[in-house]
Image (cartoon, rainbow, N blue to C red; front, side, top):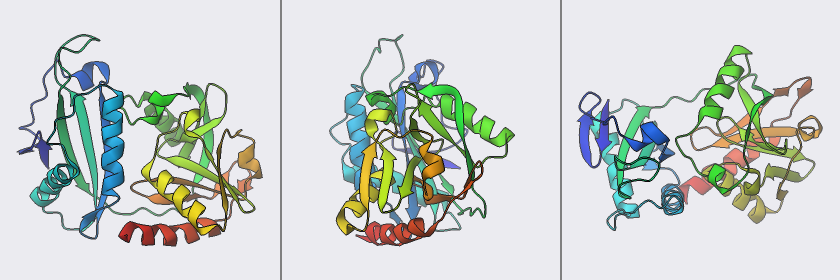
Length: 277
């Protein structure tokens, strides 16, 4: 695999991350996951501005040359260098403060590492979820950011795997629904679509943002961002999970509840149109 480390294309063995790397020592880093398909980076502008906003919030020093065009060109370097056999790739951009310091950084400047892997869509006939209750997500603005501190997602993933669930629903300290392990969550009752508000601690997902805009524009449904109790999972007619790679993943089962999938199918078509704009 070829990687882009601070603008240089290197092999995996050539990338030299030092022992005092701040992402390793303190989780002082953020990351972005993007999808490359049909010869373009999907929703690139939304990803870029979310990344810039996250960096400013964490008081990282953003170099003047890190423009939207620069961001795109550095990602495309990796795509070209790896010469994938398929036209779909999963991209991860990691940005971390420069080495040195304890909790207080010695420098505010950044390093970046971009990796890309070929991606093949995985389809599930049955997609079952369960609540993960061992540890909560703490509601607040920091939880909206995609930092590299994903321990909760790691242990929840292990729990899901051990119990043959495809995903788990994470709860906050108020015992409200936050999101799924790998994405934002939406519940449908009648013509109303519910999704946890950002104040509940969910990631500020790109597909979440796009779907909210689509639902507001087409008026077939009412979209509500709010606090959601886990009991609402049993009342919902349909549940789906969103992220930048899968886009929309329908949930089929939660405990004894079976869900419909018809609204998700409609939204996939509308999102596909949005992707081309």
